[in-house]
Image (cartoon, helix red, strand yellow):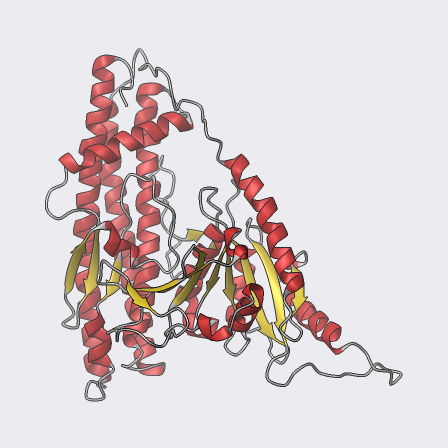
Length: 495
């Protein structure tokens, strides 16, 4: 599966590690996971009419796509219609009326995502996802959008006839070039409708065709790699051509993903003998665990230091104290994705390198999966302290609280994923609702106090993440050591 370009979420480039080690990812790559359900992620500037386009695709009222500011909307297929809001800090989602999204329980903070389940036939083919306006996402939020698009497979960019591409929007689109993410463009009339230009000889021309071609030319001048992307004008709420194109993409993409994830892979079954002279694998395991854990902790500490500078800049020159919770929560979401990616990469490297000493390198994919599954099941015997499946919540006092359980972790996902097959659970950091209540109170508008609070909070996150990363890799070391010791003793892989 071909990885796409790497997109910047405020990360360092110096993450190569000691000689002889493959570098762990210091950025999130745009890749398509064949196990993920097909999805179309809609993005665009404010006022472009994304909700109207999605409503036209499903023949629904645009009001049904209303969500709190900063939240994602995930529209899925289900036999019975329902609407649920997933809020960090809670294990269970909050239910809303399907036809009246504004009627429901009052929440202390915006949900990360709202899931709308409908029985529309189109949703059997792919999931529809609506994101916040690009201008409100910032560079960090753009990275989260690209991660979601990479897993969904398609990106739908909606722009109005009277709008132009901003630098942030062009940056997002440029990052998709070269990946397997399919890009579609929808042009809406906008507030002023379609223009009515005239040709050089005074004859009337098609205003819709001229507008679409002008937008396309402006895009290709900055991002020529999207020359193959298809464009669709949305005229009088008609999205039939766009719907057909998305259905065609879903059919082709579904077949291609099936071929990328065969049901039977080499080494998944059968006897796997240990090499006659496997070498000193236990010393290699200890050395690589220490190295990987240290590199990830150092890199996250560097990210948090740079994150603090961005937060201070936004407090002083941007949204001020009232916007601090939303900004910091978005930064924590991106940091969680990055830390999860780095931990997964490091553990896969451990299994590949140390397991290869016993069974021969490179490991067949089936053998790697068997080892990873055995390590995952055995980790519960080696975990000390709290469970690894937990959420770290920044509180209004700049402390860090925790909430245990996979349901609590799921509430933090802006775009939910399939059940994980990696050894470690995801890293999950967010803000508790009390942070919104505190900083949106007019009495708490002191920028100096906000800067001091953010510094303390990020320091607590750094300490907690450092302890958590060390604890996770120690559990992996013990569990992987047990699996490989049993194999060495019996001469075959027992998993």
